[in-house]
Image (cartoon, rainbow, N blue to C red):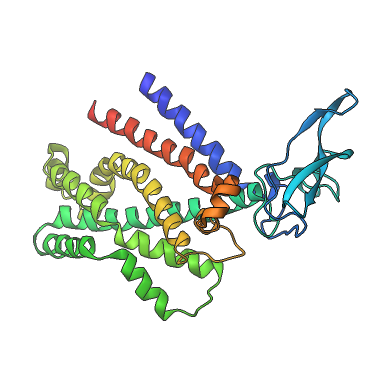
Amino acid sequence: MRRRHKLRSILIFLGVLHAAVLLAAFLAPYHFAEQHRDFPFAPPTRLHWIDPAGRLHLRPFVYRIRQDLTTASYKEDPSQFYPLEFFQQGRLFGVPQPGVIFLLGSDGYGRDVFSRVLYGGQVSLFTGLAAAFLSLSLGLVFGLTAGYYSGWPDQILMRSGELFLALPWLYLLLAVRAFLPLHIDTVQAFLLLAGIIGTVGWVRPARLIRGVVLSARERGFVLAARGFGASDGYLIRRHILPLTFSVAVTQATLLIPQYILAEVTLSFLGLGVGEPVPSWGNMLADARQYHTLVSHAWMLAPGLATVPILLGYLLAADTLLEETVN
């Protein structure tokens, strides 16, 4: 019971994070491509409740910020402040112009990092989800076929799996990318990443599902159903396939964080989604320069955003494995 309560809490936590990313257009104060050229590398905006005169405000507000061109630093101007406005122009919050609010600072083009982290999560998270779905689908089909029919289908599929394990997928992606036009749109880049990552990763779930099927096809109720004349399709659909669900779910919680990291890595290397569409990988690429990393630490926000997501999935996988063992 305690383990199920823990798993439920983890799934709720992951659901909230995914919902926040999915609702980026509502939760983010700016569009991911909106630029504020007067505020490059602005630090995170401070929210205030008490003004310089000591008066308490019912709504938080931000001061106007000004850049010192000699030192490239920013200072707040207490003479002008802008209260937060909620549910304006289809967004949860924002401030009236010419005020700006950068909860996690801005990048070199004056784009809000907080907004871009939310929008970028749509690419990174859903690439991982799509790749995991493709990988598990292939693994389920090939694992069922190899385990149920055995013989030459098993030999062909498992030997092919060994070939896929030996493939250097990074170089494969480089080779595929070399045949494509220099600039591809976001949808093509998304499908390319999800397709290659998911196709290469089907072997492990296929082997595990194959083992479950090899055991299940010799169980008494399966043999009895076969003796009564049940077809192969009926046996697989009604008796064998349900036994593979626990393995498939556990593998999903393991594969999704791996594929999210794969997308972040590939986009960081310039092989994924390109600007101005954000992903956590190409956002981290902006922080690869030493002076940017030292002077503008908030540029690491996309990397920090991956931590709770990955921990949530790994904790879910650990809990599912404990449930399976016990």
